[in-house]
Image (tube, rainbow, N blue to C red):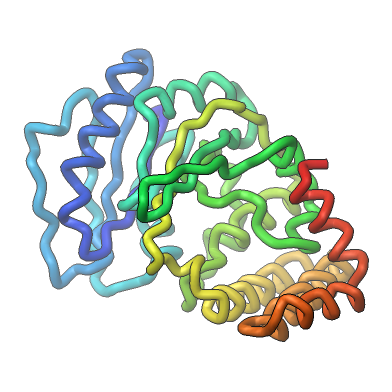
Length: 283
């Protein structure tokens, strides 16, 4: 297999036929590639229901978790079953352009991974870019992942070589959903890996208001857990760890507080404030 698309399904039967159509459209645009879709059922009490006639020009593999594992555990289970040289982690309620896979494959070549641009779509259907100005150019700057956090909105924007998935992500299983993306990319970069850049918009993230990423308290809890894993595997990078611990402490302290309170916290952490400002303005 050239590419494996791994999609955890959690109470998501209504999404499956649409995912099949998306992958079939991508496979039609990339006849030179062998593509497989790995569906991981992470709500095992609900059998998967789908229309097999929509499985066209790609292979289908079903992985049934014995119990609910959460997004990280489900992605890991899918990865163990995947046969592709390259991996695309895709969420059930998001979408890909019909040329996403062929576009990403053309840019990744023999690199470790490629990251494209994409859209975030709100409940009104309004879209805005996930990367603005020159933000995409900063995704290889490991310092920013510890000054700011995850620069990549979703792994659905990335095609990663399977053998470049870091051990810290493969061998651990996060208990709190939310920060496994940061763990994946922080470990990837700390291993000395590198992203190629694809300027195309290949991916759309649907912001429905119930995403874990919209729950700041839970995201901080998950991020603290991810940081502990990184500490275990990359103890030599203690300076980065301390910096991110300070960043997470700032976020926890400012949750639910006024804008002025947040500004005061940034005054006491000027290095973080400066890095965040220049990233947001795309410099």
